[in-house]
Length: 116
Image (cartoon, rainbow, N blue to C red):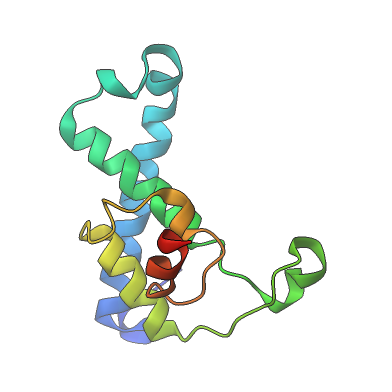
């Protein structure tokens, strides 16, 4: 269990917001499957888009998966990861396609992916 006195207050708050976002998305998946995303409220749609971007961002290229993905592993600091998550939660990447966040290290690489 993540505790703020060990991980730090910022880390804890970001992690809690991510958990909340992903839980709401999980709850909405059945509705999306039956009715489509367009039937959700604007806020729920934004939550879904945030959650999907977070999921893509969490596919960071790990060294242990190089042989399976064909993508070189990257070392990403905890601070860079927290910054990336926070920026996604703040909708800074709302206009980026989800693919721009897939298999990147630092969140700043999303711009390069989007240009590709």
